[in-house]
Image 1 (cartoon, rainbow, N blue to C red):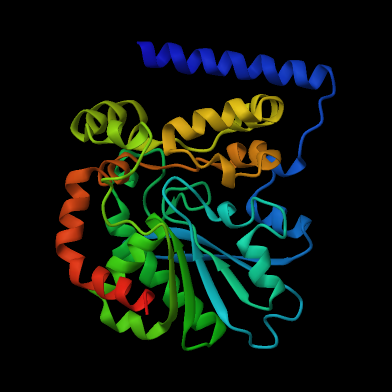
Image 2: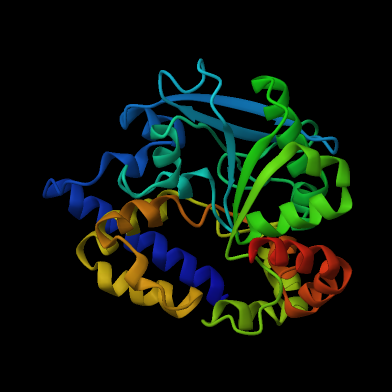
Amino acid sequence: MIFVFLIRWIGYFCFHLNLVGSTFGIESDPEIYMNISEIIRRQGYLVEEHEITTSDQYILCLIRLYTNQSVYQKRKVVLLQHGLLDSSHAWVMNLKNQSLGYILADYGYDVWLANSRGNTYSKKHKHLDSSQKEYWDFSWQEMSSYDFPATIRHIISVTRMKQLSYIGFSQGSLIAMTALDDNPELQSNINLFIAFGPVGYFANVKGIFLPLVHHYVTAQFVLGYLTRGEVLPSDHYMKILGKYVCGFYPNLCMSVIDSIAGNDGFNTNLTRLPLTIAHSPAGTSIKNLVHFSQRQIKYLWKKHKTFFVTYIKRCNR
């Protein structure tokens, strides 16, 4: 009952914010209402959308970003994989000189941006609809077993390059490390692996988000019942909140984000915060969120410890 009231209140609040903003002609960044391809084109880059189907029938959206010269000169290929509750937008959300996707393209790389199953851009399936609870029966383990191999093989096939570089953030590093450990043949396709914030255990993670997730049995039952298995999707309300609340009160928004995810405000471009909030969080499954509980991560660390330690030693050379 409280949850329903809260959702209705937020909807009512956002509706009137939008009404006031429209009445007084408040300007906003047009990228708030654009999709990833429109944003990339607006910044002057070429973009392609690729759909790939995994062996378990999920359909993923893969974004290719490049300049006029980078593809035809057979430049190096790089794949960027976002973190938990995010999308390919994470790599192009800041200014051109601050966004890794644009920076790599400017240096001549053939840049590919992945989208994990269940986020804003990857909600298709051969036989299921995202409104069905069965669609959301996945976690990062399925992303590792199915999404990662399908993405790598598609890029290798399209570019006709034998190898590519891989950059993953948080969950993006996790799914790659587990996939490469489980499928050694894929290792020959990766010539460089850079892990930003790799996930091994959460003992030192700050903020209220993960402590709440640790009550995973209750969370799975309650949220799964209320949302059919989806959690924190990007929607129109978030765009309005980003446009008006974070646009006028960026420090307030940053304080809320810090309390949830940990203090990182010094590394955030506050002028781009409305755009960030409009596109992120981008959604995932309750099951995926639950599998980031401490118990699941302990199992993960035990299973893949040898590979993780070997990888870390290589990075420290």
